[in-house]
View 1: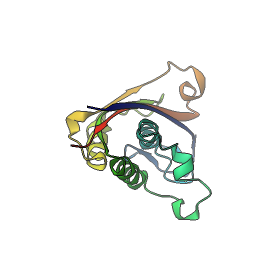
View 2: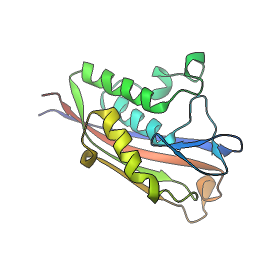
View 3: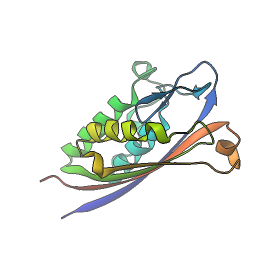
Length: 160
């Protein structure tokens, strides 16, 4: 069985007057992430991990922030396209492990729905997707509440 591993990372600044979307879930919070799309850093990190494992570049190459069609785009839809591109190369998602780095808000109430959204977009079981949340104990830009970041790793395997 052929296996390929990819890593993804994304970060966006928190700003007023934007909704906060993580893992395809809108989370009530006083700020949202600034970006051309919905700025879902979790989905973007996962998409980059899949693209990396499939040797298909990165999310910025495939979905540039200069494309007016992507203005306020739903990142889950972008993830579905990334998964399809990997599948066209004979690969499927084996599993995903991701970490959101945010001082606030508390994300644990939303992680189940995030996992379900990601699993559905990636054509896998929820048990194949893990999402964690952590703080940086008030260190760095995430710790200061200036932004949110996410890391993801993905294992792709041959389609069967």
